[in-house]
Amino acid sequence: MSEKRDYYTVLGVAKAASQDDIKRAYRKKALEFHPDRNAGDSSAEEKFKEAAEAYDALSDEQKRARYDQFGHAAFSQSGGFSDGGRFTNIEDIFEAFGDVFGGGGGGLFGELFRGGRRSSRGGPRAGRDLRIVLPLTLEEIDQGVSKEVSIKRAEHCASCGGNGAKPGTSPIACGTCGGAGQVTTSQGFFAMRTACPQCQGAGKTIESPCSDCRGQGRVSRKSDIQLAVPPGVEDGMSLRVGAEGDVGEPGGSRGHLYVIIREKEHKIFQRSGPDLITEVPFSFGQLTLGDRLEIPTLRGKVEMSIPAGTQSGKVFRLRGQGMAGLEGRRRGDQLVRVFIETPVTLTERQEDLLREFEDIESEKSGSKTFFEKIVDYFN
Ligand SMILES: [Zn+2]
Ligand SMILES: [Zn+2]
Image (tube, rainbow, N blue to C red):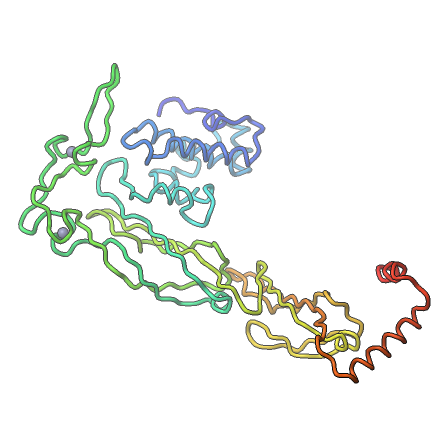
């Protein structure tokens, strides 16, 4: 790259831009110059790296302050790249900034890479990333769980060793590009190098394809994968299992496997972040007189007492009885919401007692109207 451009200019934001503006601007540039959308265009790749470098400096308040004060000189001792040349290749940029694109791991970049990436230098294509959904019970999430899942993924074809050529034969250099994988076309004054349309950049063609994989070099096969899910994960989270996706071209890396967590509904508990919510029915008598009873928790039972005169709808907090925290974070609480269960059938004696109770209640409150009682209640 020639003269180094101002980072704010690179991202197209004002000096006073907020972190949100910077993030948004970077996302836009990164998508515009994304290598998957600009195959074989080395100027797009340079712009893509340039934007990442600018974002790296401006998204960190400390680095940004240094840059505002000293310009590029602030980082010059590390050879231009703000972290000592951290982004020497495209993959590093996805590793570093994948989270800009939302979702755990992969995100939009993951989507764009579904086709399998080929490095800008040509060479073997990496395998596709795969996604699976893993339904888990609250109990499993609370404890952390080890699960075996069966996935179908691309593996090297055993017959041809992955090169796609019929056993005993070999792929030959592509006649169109002479094995380079790229062709040069001229458009007016410009000569452009693009991926070879004949071999799609592979540089090779297969004369007699392997019959087992029909020349693909890969076959779909079932594999059992052991997953270790840590305690405290949440619905929608995506865990990346490195290099368990589709196999790449010979010499290329495997794709990743993304495991998306789905929480199964629980009969008793509702989850709210680290907390669990339970609704527990009580009789009018229990709430009025107070009671002590056992409440179910995710890991067993605990004793809980409710004081006399507890109102329906009141929420009690059982500390530390919620879900396990993710990555050693504090365990959540269980929130017990009590409510009155109104009896629907009464014996004659119960009915008599209740009527008598009601009579005394209205004598106690004298001649107050319903509205006055409501006001009293809220005071
Ligand atoms: Zn084969
Ligand atoms: Zn070719």
